Amino acid sequence: MFAIPPQAPLPVRPRPILAPLRVVREPVRAPFLLDPSFPYGEDLLQFIWEARLLDAQGLRTADGRHVEVLHPGRVQHDAGPDLRDARIRIDGQEWAGTVEVHVRSSDWVRHGHQHDPAYESVVLHVVYEHDAEARTVGGRALPTVELRSRLGTAALDRSARLLQGRGALPCAAHLPPAEPDRMGTWLESVLVERLMRRTTAAEALYAHLEGDACALAWHLLCRAFGQRANAEPFAMLAHALPWSVLRRVRDDGFRVEALLFGQAGMLQVDFVDEHPRRLQAEHRALALLHDLRPAPVAAWTFGRLRPAAFPTVRLAQLAGLVARMAGDLSDLAAAPDADTLRRLLQAEPSAYWATHYRFDQATPARAKPLGAATVDLLIVNAVVPLLFVLGRARGDQRSRDRAIGLLEQLPAERNALLDRWAEHGVQADCAARGQALIELHTRYCAPRRCLSCGFGRHLVAPRQSP
Image 1 (cartoon, rainbow, N blue to C red):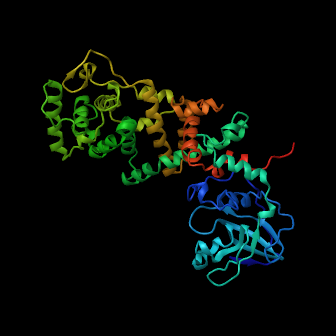
Image 2: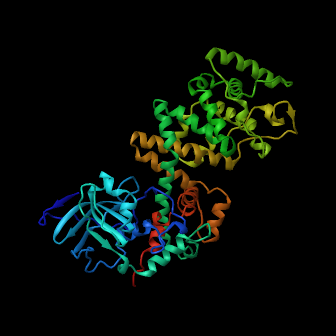
Image 3: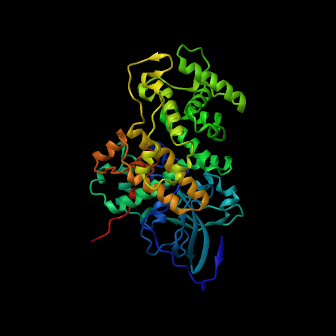
């Protein structure tokens, strides 16, 4: 916190329509924990102050000093004061620092801020109701502004309906006429947020793999093959079978299959059929040669899966894919469009699997190629993150744009959540929009983060006159 001479020029900072994406520090509190004098929570007060949704004419501190808000600050959700980069003029003296917001000014002491040096930078205390003086660690009395008489009821009522709504989509009643351009812009931001969140672990893995793009593609492809039920066992397999080993046998489909099933821990029993016994012998020799230890077989899930989605079938399909691509997974990152990727990812397991879903259990003959929907999911869950990680690591915006472009070329997945959005007039016309709507519901609607949502903030803000 520091004072600025009155003659100092002030920076011009346009107000954004949509605030930047932020991570909420804590979930919305249950209504019974809120102060009855303002039963909405501090997050709404912070939003009102930041967005200037109050009557600021003749604004004064509790002790009568004139207040002019040059810049209200930006809400932040890390430890420390609520808003950063505020610029406030009090009785002609300009101050730059932080703003702290409370329902009651006595909350300053109740939260222990009087003992925290991090709050020494506070230049203004903004409260709904002023009921006590607040002082910093150094003993400085904080100028306090009370908002109780300056807030309209319309924004508060709209916020309450959003935050306390019982439906899965708090703003469902507002969605049919929901300004497509505004909603579309917000969904684009949410999609990028989802990609960044979902690729955090992949970025760390890429660093651990010393920037080996093919090895990263192998790990992402394995996890994607496992889908929801077997993602973790497939991820364990990728670690148990390094790409540096698998690439040495890339021109031999049988040896690829032996390594995959062997390192998956599925060749550690006595078999009747000749094919698994040959795989077992081949794996034994390769594991000895490369000092490999299998992943635990107990990790694999077969229950509640269709036979076509059994991990044995998925492993056989993955083996066929690696052999068909000659082990060169860099082609995935270089493919120019979704159709090219679909052709690259078309694979069929070896002949044994035409009559089997599991070893030693013969079934009527049926081809088991990767289905079109499964191939699209591999693009969404493996190739898109691969491009996004490589783009961020290399500073290549084109790779990141290609990742989003692929999602725009693919159809959205079919699930109950997207069906619910469609019932309210919001259609997922491609995978990009579908992924954004999934993220919006999971990260904003379900935890009632309406005041962090660009569309929610728009609904709470006052309506403009035509």
